[in-house]
Image (cartoon, rainbow, N blue to C red; front, top):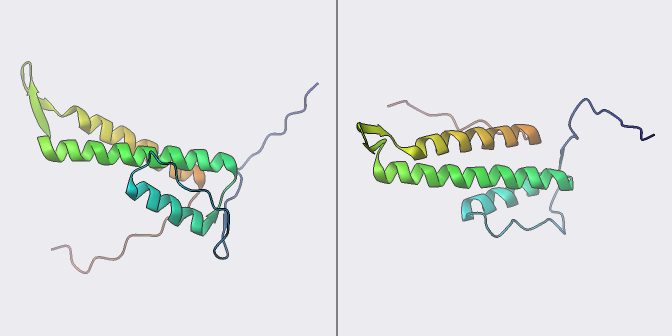
Length: 122
């Protein structure tokens, strides 16, 4: 009989105390933005191997999000449809990619720093 241990909480991710040799390089298929985020994240946190897979998924979702945003920016919010204008298909892709990115980041338990304060909303 195989004993299975249930883990109530995810494996903690520890902050790095300084530069560490042997930090994995980012996957080549990621965009330049995602590769920078990979390096910045691994510079601050220590990951188990399975966390690297989740980080890769998060950054792939971010790349897909950026691609969809570029298409909507280029084509507009609507495209011609059979019965008149309809929502651009990339809007759904953008939404789904954003959800996947946020869920993966949350799964990793990363402490995201708040955005800088705006001096004015105008």
